[in-house]
Amino acid sequence: MLILAKAAMAIMLGFVISMVFGFFFVRFARKQKMGQSVSLTLGERHLKKNGIPTMGGFIFIVPVLVSLFLLYIRGSITMNHNLFILIFVFVAYAILGFMDDYLKIRFKNNKGLSITTKFLLQMAIALVFFYVFMKNGGEPVLWITSIGVNIPMGWLFGIFILFVLVGTSNAVNITDGLDGLAGGLSAIAFLAFGIITWNTGWMQGYEEVAIFCFLLVGSLLGFLLYNTHPAKIFMGDLGSLSLGGALATVAIVSRHELSLVLVGGIFVVETISSFIQIIAIRKFHKKIFKMAPLHHHFEQIGWSETDIVKLFWVIGFLLAMAAITYGVWI
Image (cartoon, rainbow, N blue to C red; front, side, top):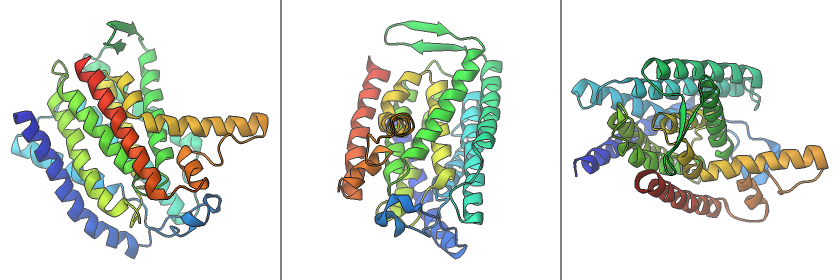
């Protein structure tokens, strides 16, 4: 019951701070004209969203950090290397996303940082992750607990960390194309990983990492008050990259990397649909989908934005429940 009480407290704390902070931040973003430029290729529906403020990721990033600080000074949580890695990646990817968003707003286009710059910065983040992880007794091993298999990876585990961080952050970023879609799916994913992590009692700081997840769930629910259709603000790369980086980090430090594929099933499908479309156009000069990623395909065949989001949320929730079953029970 204590675990349930702590989880409820963390979700409530994150939600209240996010709701209040978001009320003021949305007005600040409008006043500062932090509007997003919408691509003409997305159709008339999305052109109506041109100028809606971005960088809404602050609405869930700031409350999580403030809540962690309050809990730390109160003595409710302690700092450990796994929580440090998680906070570092969360903030580092937020800074990376902020730089990208700032350039897009500053020059009123969708270019942002170059792919090379993004990759080099993501590589630096992964190197810090790998160094801290290994210095504190982390094993460079891929665990497949359901069948009792451990795969030693050595220094290749650093490349694996980079791959998971880059892949997950970009997958969330690709999915962030409809009001509330990425935010809702992320809330579901972190709820699942909060429950999974609380079951990893062997991991140093497992309770703190789980509380981080629950704080983020509450903060995302507060953010969704301003991001669901019709959105008053978008999370931007600031939000999507930080969410993806944090989600990947929790999966790695809890040694549930394979569960990430299931928990983030919608993110995976969205990313794969984009790759399939790119390959089909470049190699065969044909389109598999009317538009990629997949949520835009549903739009093109006449589905309403809210119906697409609700369907993806439901599927994401079912996948997350399956992942909890796999990660905790099986």
